[in-house]
Length: 336
Image 1 (cartoon, rainbow, N blue to C red):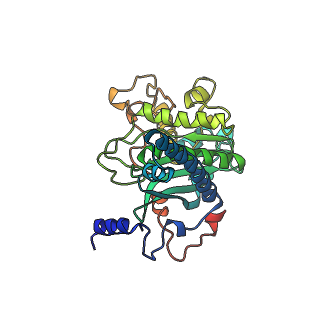
Image 2 (image 1 turned 45 degrees about the vertical axis):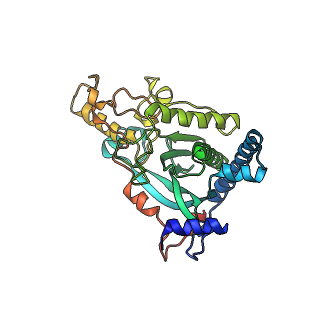
Image 3 (image 1 turned 45 degrees about the horizontal axis):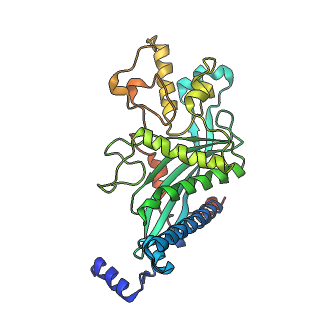
């Protein structure tokens, strides 16, 4: 059966709902986190779409129902699901552990890895539009990771309808997530804002050819706009960057930096300690080829020639775990 013909036939009959009994995004397990995110996003989207439809109705002298339908551009319901929740342990690398053993620096950090997916029903099919990986370090961890959340990976494709609502929806989802962890007792959130290199993908593979990858500055501003809105709502107190927080004070050492899975700093600190042990000159300026090592709002002068950005892609173990839950897997941990 031709999918395009089927869709056209459904539209003629005024029924675009799916006729299959195959489980959909709505049938995936729910959690307290996914419920809050989905409810928040839907409420905000409903208000925003209503305002857009009202404006269109007034400008084009259309009935409200018709304006609302045109504004939606065929976009269906939004679903948010948490598809991964794993307890994991990050071992501190040997040189870091040895160098700061006199400070009783932890040998490991335990955290919760969660993956959040956004679906939209398009022409009767639930399509994955957005993926988010977060690592949550609770109060049982020692500093510098205590009560810290790491927004590690974020990825999307531009199939949302209407397309211009992408930023609005994703900002609202991140806003709701930060509010959720704030209420759970977390007091800091670290956000990585480094776009992938051309040809690389963090979560969603093989993006549309006409989808552009934002440049460093634009992606950084995308996050800043979201965080400023969080500040206006009282969700975020202070917004800063890695340089001002950690590197501006020369008395700080590496133990003050958050030590997160997949982050740039753990590997770079290990390399720097190795260079120090070998007596290399660390004040040497990096080669121009290494300037791809820019990280979010976080500037690091010695990041240099190692190019340690996220271009190698997402942690494979976490990615494999983010699929549809296989048969026989206990989903109780997801509801925690």
